[in-house]
Amino acid sequence: MLGSYHQATEYFEIMFNKSKFTSLPKEHQAILQYAAEAVSSANEWKGMDYYSKDLQELISKDKVNVIRTPKDVFEAQIKAWDGLIETLGKDPFMKKVMDSQKAWVQRVVYYGLFNSADYRVAYEHHFGKLKL
Image 1 (tube, rainbow, N blue to C red):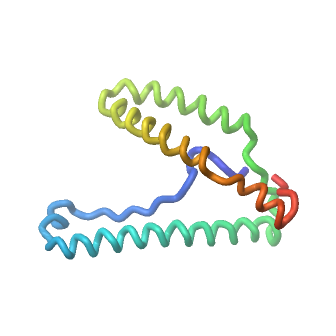
Image 2: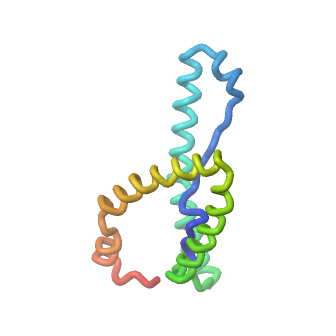
């Protein structure tokens, strides 16, 4: 099954020792900041390239039957997450973190869903009906 809420995207992280980082000259801090942003972006693009190639190989070479995750599995994931949120939300700090994340997601995902083109229409126009 392809698609899940638990790993909706990949992120690349570089961590620095804060005291060592802040002790660097501002121009060196900027170099590290821009280098980290560049490699993080490159990691996302490379991931899309690698994963899409790997998927095609799984389907064509290895004959793996790949299907889109069914809606009922997505719904079960959300219900399971609700229980976890309830448990984690008992801790005041975790509640504060999750409330902040939820507010960000409500705004950003709304924008993304509202603004994104229907890429399936364009894909099917050029390549035929998508088989999920």
